Length: 345
Image (cartoon, rainbow, N blue to C red; front, side):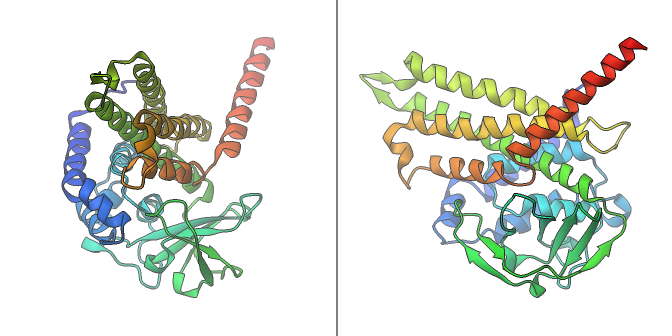
């Protein structure tokens, strides 16, 4: 299998990177963090550019692309620290949930913003929803019943809770969920797996930005008459960051192509492994980036803390560390058992 990007994929990546640099650069990011501007402008721009229509069929005014292209696009969104809910909105559009919410709408006929929760809760704590007042619909992935339902967010009872990330306001659902509308063609396990993979892509993009930020600062910050990047300890930190990012990037892109046949659903075990690598690259990369910045990295004025807070948040979105580790271990054990039985036969 050839993992090199096609010319069309490179154009998609470069075009989206240019759009984000112009519409959500450092000044716009700071304005959003400080409350001087909301995220609606960049979300509308991404909707108009087709981010949420990448996997929607052409007959439904989508682009008809695959999960591999969506992963590339979400890497760029993660690199730019674009606030969400990106993943849930993409899942709603890709799986035909557009128009199932009471207020479903969006630029160019898009689906509007969507949220997602999974039930039963198991040990994941309270049900939290990102930017609840701005949502057009909420997808409920009921893995116990094996069904997906669409809810009007206006029917939910919730209270706002403090969020770690200043660009990710959260609401906790405080009452039982209404029944909602059944989406008979949607598979909750598939949506959860795809959401986990797209979240991993966001983490890879964030980890990439952490490396770029650390290297850029190490080149310009001087100590003892020379750039701090000339010191071996700083070089080692930056090298280790890159050594975590590239395997994670490869794992995420490979997981997007791990389905059986063209366009097949991704392998959940491959996705779990990719998410583990991406989370480690993002969280440890943001910490190392902060270390390279020294005392400046701890200040509100520097953007480094935004990387770490977003990485921590994404680490717990969709499948977290424990769930991914358990799925990966189960997959490895099952593979070993099949190999052993095959050898005996």
